[in-house]
Image (cartoon, rainbow, N blue to C red; front, side, top):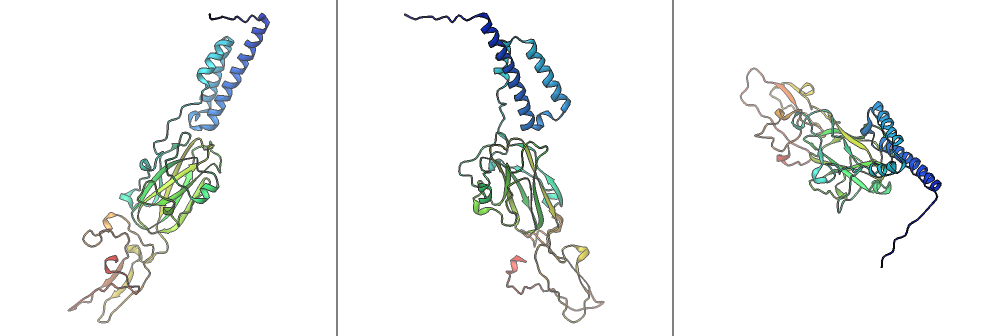
Length: 311
């Protein structure tokens, strides 16, 4: 046979419990608001809106009876359910579009993404320095395509100050695979274990680059990256304005020797499809023909035994 027990306490005890529950509800709710502010700055960009939110909701608590305040507390102090960022996986990396059909110069900016609910993929690896720093608990991915040799600077930034330095970092991979293995970490653009940038004046290899932004469990907030592209260095005869000048051609052979290093292409129109398919750099040379000539020839050669289809 079931039994029912009743607990009978003095009225003063219930009044005391009401007071405790009431003030606990208010304290925890204010704590929740402050947590939302510090962890997710983007949700309260307007300070007036924040203060209005706090005042209105605390007023509601004052008007509620303590038990009602507790019930309301249980409904609203739950940690916000953040959706996984769109670029949580390498295969869905957020692409940074390079202007001028991939040949543009300047700074190109990614979307802003919230790392709060970011996860890891099965088999995901990290740069050794990222592992050592403990920034291997969550990650998001970005991608850009390099169409020609450039000076490259990649920066990791945040729109506010919700994530402390040292809680997030990044590594750059030159790879055609998702997920890229640790062996594909680019050696010119070294990993960084905090907000900041990595730079190299001459990144020659064209193709897709993946940026893995990762952090520890305290990395909760918005981040974004920028890709800054400049004319590579060193270069000679890279622009028409700085072309080598043979002058007026005579009956003697005239030659110029130079290093092919970080020369690039200004735009897609500089490529001649019939002879430069797959080529990603160029040099410029000028000459003046004589008034009369019977034969004229141009010879391209290398002192390093380069294959002819590589020039």
